Length: 250
Image: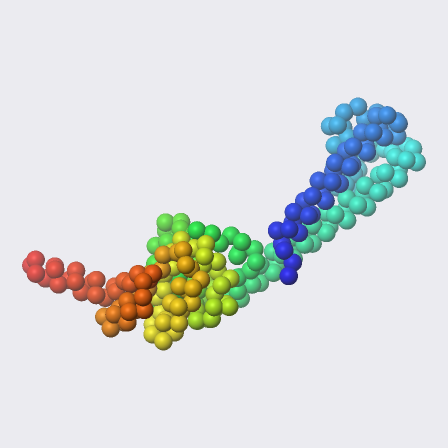
């Protein structure tokens, strides 16, 4: 697999080498050997000639007049254009791949590198859907993971970063950088899948705060019995308690 960051660093280094070699060669040939139609008396003039040569603008105000200068310019043009075209082609292809993977609901390598100190919403049930709106309003960095491609597609259409993955498959979940996440919220209606998802997330997010949304009292008790390291919130129970208090106050 190609390491995109390393390749970009390589291309940036090559571009820098081309410009350094171009400026140095232009200055030496133009200043000490009078290889151009006008003297090159400063690095600024050398940089100017290098840029217009590599960019193929070629204003014609500075022209190589000796064999050495012409050979140098030919090499500079061929190498410079080659490096720039290779860089543009690589970056463009990476952007196309990232766009295609994002559209399909898959996490691209580029997006993966940006995941740090983020909130992960596992499952696309009602609480996580509402929570996504709140996190977006607060400009929090977060992603949503769901095995439902339709839910993920709707979230992406609304401007959210939503991805399709099996929440119970550790091989699929590991790519979402749970170990770098600030917190993880699990909200799934399927009890059996949720139990497996909790185990997977606990294994991947050892340093992150994990909160599980329970949709009933029995479910809350069952989740708490799974052990420490997982917080449980039961929205319906919380609402019931608040309503009962309000009724008593009437």
